[in-house]
Length: 377
Image (cartoon, rainbow, N blue to C red; front, side):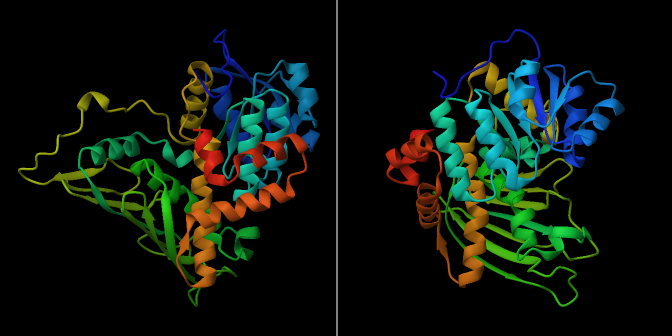
């Protein structure tokens, strides 16, 4: 039996999109190009911006500045939340209490504490809350995961990420622009490849003398995962020349050989000669995954139709966000950080700051973050 409510397959899933900014318009185009979904409403506090986005695409949908009104008028079955991160907790909570499952742009909430509040809200309402960790969705990455499964025990995973984007705006002023705004993609992919969660992290950050960022734009983090695997992320957002792909450059070292992936093309695998580790099943190869947010949307629809828990379910995704908070905490203290501590500290904050009595009661019933997350799996 599914942990969340499913939606009967009686035609395209009727969705309301919240957010008509640049990313929202990108989602508009993906949604309208996906036969399994139908856009029925668009919500934004800037009504003229929303109306313009609808006019430009020749769409006939309900437009408004209040989710509850638009969802009711449009007969919505689900919500896609593409608002700014500080609004994610409020929008996701409102949708869940309206009885609507949500696909939310990353991060699902700005902090682990707010994410735990959303976990409790999803449990209380019985609705699916999924985040779009869009960089999980590449056929080449799915193939890398399939190949890694045939290499036996994994000892090391490394990511090199070196780019030099001049964004301007808020990223230039962040204390940890690389860790907080970008590294979560790589951290989440590491969890995806290993099918495991981290137990501790040791991270150091700095800012090269030529950097145009105010905060630390370079970092090296070493994570220990369940089972002892080490994952190392090293990168910079101010490294011009010979740049990596936006997915970074990956290497996996395992008992039965090694695999590398440049983040764009096909992975390259070399198996140890004479190994008795079975090769991966060719029948399991998947080349049909749509890339990035389109892939996330497809998995969201599949989950609501079948009851299968998606990879971006909030109960699991909290660990990807915890990797960011743990790395930042380690960088600030100069010492390794245990993820049990990150989660339990966040749980204490979530319990103390929760404003809804019913959500607070669910949080209190857990007795701790670990118990609550395990119960929701």
